[in-house]
Image (spheres, rainbow, N blue to C red):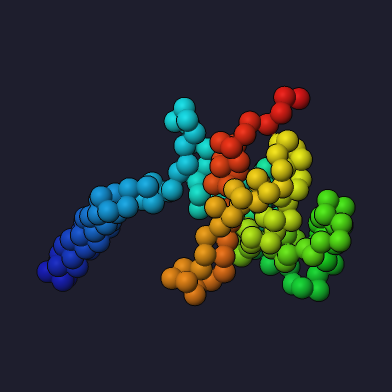
Length: 193
């Protein structure tokens, strides 16, 4: 029996070292060499070097001078530990009420404007860092007023931060909220309160 168990234990140890240690270390090393920023989580740092967030994960922005992200169903708002959709069906009264409440607030902010779907719906992960150009444009007048800028200036920043579809045809155009808000901060400091 020992003769049969010994090769099994040796194989378990060998494959554990090979596939559980050597392979992950090799892939991590290759990723660090080829794509250092992405391998470290696409972290965005401020002028003083502090981490302000990740360009891959949505963050809450509530101040009027910032673009607001999509609503989040991830935990307590953009909590990556609770990443997932709400799993509420389209006829669920809680979802219907939340969407109605969000739509009323957006209609008050931009009367007569069409409300893009991503302004009132969450993404599948609840952590989507991007919004549609239409949702960003809907917010441009509010951001401009809060910053003392013209809507055209804010829209220009949004346009410069709009990414087209991957390879020109995969997906939809999108605006990364964190990167656009950083560009807005670089354009003009907010008025003193």
